[in-house]
Amino acid sequence: MGILARSALAVSALTLLNSIVFGAAIVPGFDSTADGRNDDGTYTIGGCTNPAPGGTCSGDPVPIGFSFNFYGTVGNTLYVNTNGNVTFDAPLATFTPFGLDDAFRQIIAPFFADVDTRNPASGVVTFGNGTFEGKNAFGINWIDVGYFEENVDKTNAFQLLLVDRAETGAGNFDFIFNYDRVLFETGDASFGSDGLGGFSAHVGFSNGTGIPGESYSLFGSGVPGTFINSGTFPLVDNSLNSSVDGRYIFFVRGGNVVTVVPEPGTYVMLLAGVGALAFRKRMLGQSK
Image (cartoon, rainbow, N blue to C red):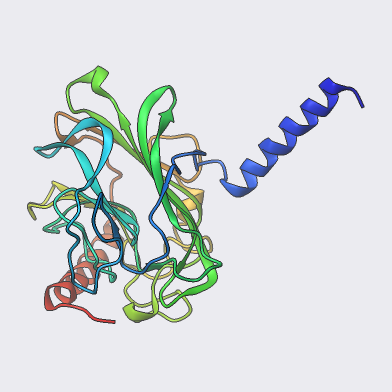
C-alpha cells in the first residue's frame, strides 16, 4: 500500500474514531485541564476541587479568555461545577437539581444532575480554550461520566461551549449544549434508582434574579424519562438553532438570551411542580 493510501486510511480511521468517541455534536478538544476525580466538586484557580457538601471553594473562578455580558453580569471568568453546570456568582455543590425557571443562581446548565467521577472507569470533567466555527471559544466536557454513588453502569457524554461573538457587540456570546449520550438522569441521593427516576436532570439557564422570563428550563426538565436516549424527548435526537442532532444553540445579545424553544403547554404545569419541589429541597439543605 502506498504512502498516500496509508495516509488516507489513517485519516479515515481517525474520523471514524472521533465520530464514535465524540458523536456528531461534541466538538473535539477543550480538554487542556482536568478537574480530577470528585463528587459535587468545583474547579477553581488555587482553591479546592471537592468541597464538603454545602461547602465553598476559596480559589478564583476560571478565566475563559474573552468577556461576556450575561443579564448584566459582565466578566470573563466562571466556576466549573462537576454536576453538569457552570456558575458565575459562586461555586455550586448542590447535587439534586433545582428548577431553573426562577432560580436565584447565575447558572448555565447543559445537564444539571448528580455527576460522580470518582470511579476509575468514569471520565473526568475537562475544559479549556479552542475554536468553534472559526470563533474563539471556551468549552467544558463531561465525557463518559458516571453518577452518584460511583456508578458507571450508565454514563453520559455532553459538552458546554461558550463562543465569543464580540463582532456583533461587546459582551455578546453564544452558548451551546452538545450531547452524544444520555443514559442516566438522576443520582442515588436524588431518589433515583439505577440512574433513573427521582429528581431528574434540569437543562437551561438562569440570571439569578428569580424574575420570570430571565431564566429558562428546557421542557422536560425534572421530568423522569424525558432526556435519556430512550426517553420521550431524547436530547441526542433533537436540536435548537442547529441542523446537528444533539446541538442546542442559544444567542446572548446585549446581555439577554434572545432565542429559546417554546414550551408545549402540556409540560409547563408538570415542570413548574417538579421544579418548585426541587428548589425547596435545595433551600432546606442536603447531605449525602
